Length: 537
Image 1 (cartoon, rainbow, N blue to C red):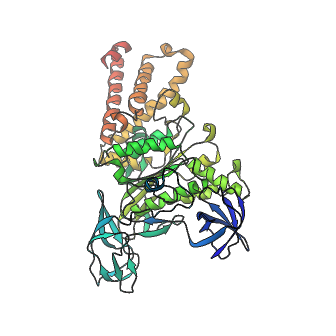
Image 2 (image 1 turned 30 degrees about the horizontal axis):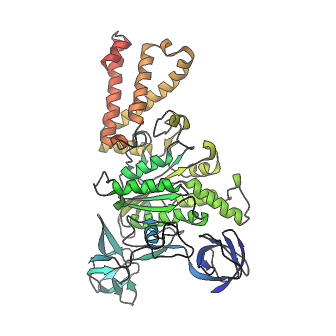
Image 3 (image 1 turned 45 degrees about the horizontal axis):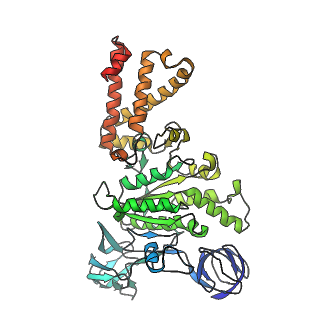
């Protein structure tokens, strides 16, 4: 299926190909730049090119690839760094320098690397789709190889093999490969979706204690410039209690991504002691990369995350930031001259985001394991305006909302999560889980902490009128204790040992503050002076 370029408008290219399907891949120009079909007309197609189109000319060749954008799934993804099209950035840098040249393509996985395959089935056995045929060791993980078709095994390898070799064959002649291709915009199958029942421990006290997130849940971090979105997401990526992390730098600055990678290479996972990068996949589409590849990057990342979820692992997808993805979608929509919606975003923004969020969850896989995919997405509303379309579209679907407050950030309180505006729809179930698994008093302390903060907020308005000295001793005590809750409990320094707080340590710290308040309140009732009580504490 070949043709010619009819017109070029920035990254939007019109070609005279027929017989294409929407979202099929097309190579355009002498350089073989890759694009995606975004509009079909009677005798032509409109292609959004993923790469820089400078130098492209009319009448250069175009060729359909008869397939949508796909990722290659198999051993070797972990510790990898890819762009939005799953091109291996480190190998490209080694071979051609720090910038990706037009039409430059490499297979994302190392075909020559040797893996030891340990079979779990025997020749002649009948297998069903999703059954484990065997596994290879990928770092600290046992990477299973699944049957993709039902049938009888005619041959199965045992021992060292590479990704370029077949691991065996079915009786009908179909080969068994360790590598699987999957279209990024199509969710991977599972038996059934389950309700989230276990917490996702992030190590951030304000999240784990006040607004807990569930494994398989979704959350957003909206916040203006300087509120610490990137630092908070990076802290969660370092310490979160999951098997694997997929981190997407979507339209972020290159220096921030370089800093992230430098830290991940040097740090150890606090749960396993292994190098942090061994459990991490990084998808990088910095702000200087083409917007079409940025729009595809979150789908590339979520497909890789689903692949490991299907093995029964607990996976976390972090995207920084979804606003940059929405801006790329807006730019593509504008180049196609589509009818704009609010603030120029396409009218289908909400449905696209909802479809993406739907790929999170706890599932029973085709092989019968239980795996989960959680999502935490940062949002960068212009001017910190939370009424803008991207934030509002995310709010309709996300299960937890962590509002990053500019005033808290200006007071150097980090994480700058506003404890009055934030919420979690998983709170009741997760507080019950912590009460059962960590300590029976978790729920009561959760209630007392909320009560202290709410009473302090009420008293703050009174104190602004009459002054702190005009308050009664009991009220002044409450404000002092609430200040300790804010400074010693809710605030964490991402660059010290306090950056990570396990649930037991979190409970111990808040229990100590509440106990101090109860003792001091009892002393005041006995007639002691506030200054004496504060010295005793």
